[in-house]
Image (tube, rainbow, N blue to C red; front, side):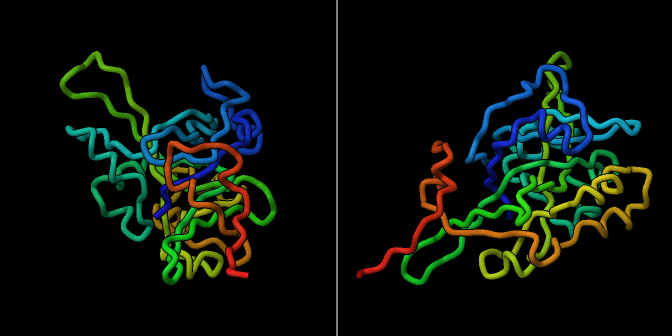
Length: 233
C-alpha cells in the first residue's frame, strides 16, 4: 500500500514538468507538506482533448455511484492486477486516469524487537515521482445542489528490488514518456494496464527516518531527515 507521501515542489513547477495548466484557484507556489495521508489533498494531472490540467483532489476515491461517502476511507489505493475488475475502479480506469506528482513516499518495515521503521523513498535522479492514479467526481445523491467532490486514488503494484524487503507493494511510477499513453483513454485498455508495472530496479533510493512521520498531524522538513541507527556504544 501507499498511504503517506511528501510534496514540497511548487504546483507551478509540477505543471511545467508535466506540460499542464494550473486549474483556476490553484496557488502557483502552493503549500509544502512532508506528511500527507488519506483524506488530505493531493495534486493530480488529468487530460481532456489533449489538454492537461493540474488540480487538487482529496485522497481516497469516491465513485460517482456511491451512496455512502465513507467508502473513500478505504479506497486510497487501487491494485493494478484487479483494477479492470473491481466495481470501485473499473470505470475510472477506463475514463478518468491521472498522474499524481509527489516528491517522495514513506513505507514502514519491521525491525526485530524494535518496532516499525519508516523509510523515505525518492527518485534517484531527484525529479518528482509521477504516480499512476485515478480520479472521480461525486455529488451527494440526496442533494442535487451539493458541491462536487473531486477525489483520487494511487495505483499500486508488486515491489521492485528497490522496495522489496521493506514492503510487499509499491506505487506505480510512470516516466515522462509513459504519462501520455497512460492518460490516453482511447488507447487499448490492455496497453494501458501493461504500463502499471513495477519501476525498473535502480529508479528509487531510500533511507530510514524518524518515527514522527507516523502521526499525520506532524509536518515539516525534519520528517525526511535521515535517522541514524542507534547503538549501545
